[in-house]
Image 1: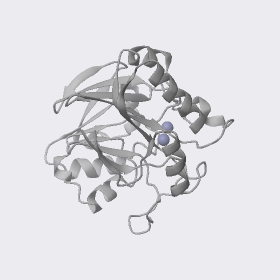
Image 2 (image 1 turned 180 degrees about the vertical axis):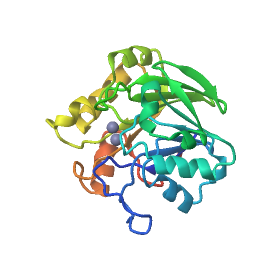
Image 3 (image 1 turned 90 degrees about the vertical axis):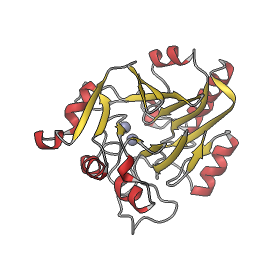
Image 4 (image 1 turned 45 degrees about the vertical axis):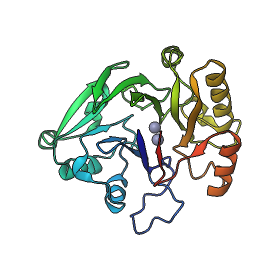
Amino acid sequence: MKLLFLGTGAADWAIKSEEETLPGERRRSSMLLGEHILIDIGPQSFAHAKRIGVDLTKITDIFISHTHSDHYNKAALLSFAEAAESTVTVHCHADAAAKLALDPQEEKKVHIHKLKVRDTFDLQGLTFTAFSANHYVADSKEVPLHYVISGEDKLLFYGCDGGWFTAETWEYMRKMQFDCMIFDTTVGEMDGNFRLAVHNSFPMLRLIKAALLENHMVKDNCIFIADHLAQTLHGSFAETVGALAKMGMLMAYDGFEIVI
Ligand SMILES: [Zn+2]
Ligand SMILES: [Zn+2]
């Protein structure tokens, strides 16, 4: 499985054009999985994917973890749908569908696949399962989702956004063994930040990683990736790379590519 991170920042990063964005700055959440599948699309995702030469005609499916504006942007969705060769399917929680805010004309341009928690389905040779995330979208019954993706003999966890795991997700994941896990890392080295109920911090990720190891939920060479980093809650790019290395984690950055 090939992962290309198009945006790795939390919602406090300024939304800048491609020309204005400096190396080391982060755009909002988006990841390309293989050639056909996107997970989350922020306001800059389309322009960035286009600039770095992603073949936009090949996009067939877009997974939305939740509808916070750093993970779902309607203009980006319509641009991806326009550029794609075939009709794009948007996968999201059933109660998130209305929050896509597509008018009847726009709805004709995409398929919407409404998910429930623990729905499993095959796509492009991979199997996707939606799990509940410990996260919250105000004024909505939407359940933010984490995705577990298996295929090519690998098991991948995508966990942006969400702090810890829900009890249900943890119980299901205890039967799994991951090759790669991508974590919400909104908060850095802070013990008491108020976001601890809905986002992870470095101290939380140390506990999570220890629990995953002790409960044999990861393979020996599992790759842990920190994603969704807030600008104001972390040190410099180099400091964060170093701090995460000490935790046995890689830091995602815009343009980061890895094959698992
Ligand atoms: Zn977010
Ligand atoms: Zn969020």
